[in-house]
Length: 212
Image (cartoon, rainbow, N blue to C red; front, side, top):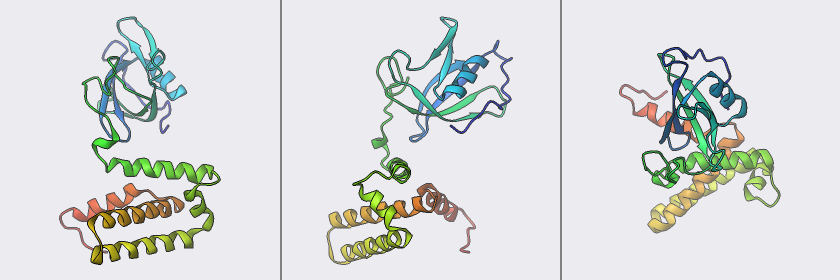
């Protein structure tokens, strides 16, 4: 979790409570809204799972303590007025007590936006890099070293070019996926993220951008 207890939250505006907007860290879908007092906030930070203050029962309740669908905290941000929290999480399951992904009945599947899977894929590859399980192809790439990983990106890029010129659309997508996977492995080995490339492309798209 990225946060500590140093946020200067103004608990005085709503009789000791602040709204907490819960957002999926990967999909950016808003999942629910709850309220926290200082004790709930401190417990959330301490345990890494979202804890609210129940205005009905007038007590603390950790989301998921009954259902098992915990909200695992990734980051906590405070708004400009210091009285509303934005908490990004990895949910363990459906968030709403009715069984839906969000309290508004909306879907929160990574499949709703396939581009989000690239971040999820790199998270998986980073875990492989940390744990290095035996028998994993990704592990073998890390063990072979930087030069081999870079070489694999080049080999897959060549396969992509061949399919683009003389192959089918289906094979083009297949080889392009291979290249992208090996590129993410290479980025991971360098401590970089695919999102940094997306940010670079976004910067290039801005008016007035000049090649450097």
